[in-house]
Amino acid sequence: MRADRLIQALLLLQGRQVITAAELARELEVSVPTARRDLEALSMAGVPVYSTRGRGGGWRLVGGARTDLTGLTETELTSLLIGLAQNASREPERVAAMRKLMRAAPAPFRESAQRVADATVLEGSWGEVRHDTETAAVAQLQRAVASRQRVRMQYAGSRGAVSAEVVPLVLGSRGSHWYLLAAPVVDEGPIADVSRMRTYRVDRIEQLDSDSRSGVAPDDFDAQSAWARMTARVEGLRGAVHATVAVEPWAVRAVLDRFGEQAKMLEVSPQAGGRAVMEVSAQHAEALAEQLAGWTSALEVIEPQEVRAALSALGQRIMSQYANE
Image: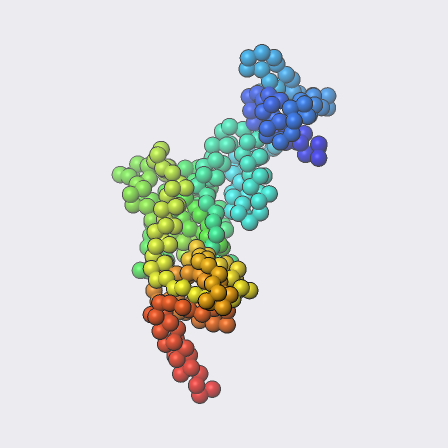
């Protein structure tokens, strides 16, 4: 709708020193003549916008591009972008909204909002999806990223509760779980020591407090690469044992969804009775047997023998436990 385009054009004008009709056309995904007519319509409607010709020419707002026509403060804009970032993978239209807000925001606002976007990763699930995401803690951590500040937290780790004062570097989700990559600073300075970076699951953070002291990533830190290295390491731990299974056609999609990246298609084999042959993985044979136990009507483990034996032993334990009931 044209009214939507005019609002977008107005936001873009307030966020830039100058914009040409060609640049506006690319942003709005319309033709250059349409973009020019939109700019002229804004001027005729009384918006203080004017055009200049020659090198460096284009369309400007009277009084400069720093007028905040959105009425949003930096904190409000960052909070809005945090909400969009947390849900971007689930609603693609929010991705577009986030990009438009980022482009339209005044330059000083864009810097903190961009840090949030750069430090946020959203991916598919590891195994079973749960719904206990601590979105308030995620938002607080993202605000720390935006303001370049450290945080203090109490964390329930696998070896007991620990205290940490860290710089949040990357926030990523897998399904409904959020994970934090964070590191302490180097020699009490503001720079994070990425050689001591650790992974924390956000729902295990028992207490989280903001710290007024500065905390920033090194200039050469790449959030996406750090996240990729972490997930590759975890996938390696999770996938130490592999099993080949024959899956009924109607259950293929469900098995792929359940196992995530720990499952892959191999073939549809006549030798398997027309069933799909897949490979599934877990940290050890017993863990894989426990995950497969509920799928006996949908799949059969072909190999290895240790997984078949682990399934058999699990079945015997269940029968023994309930034999007298």
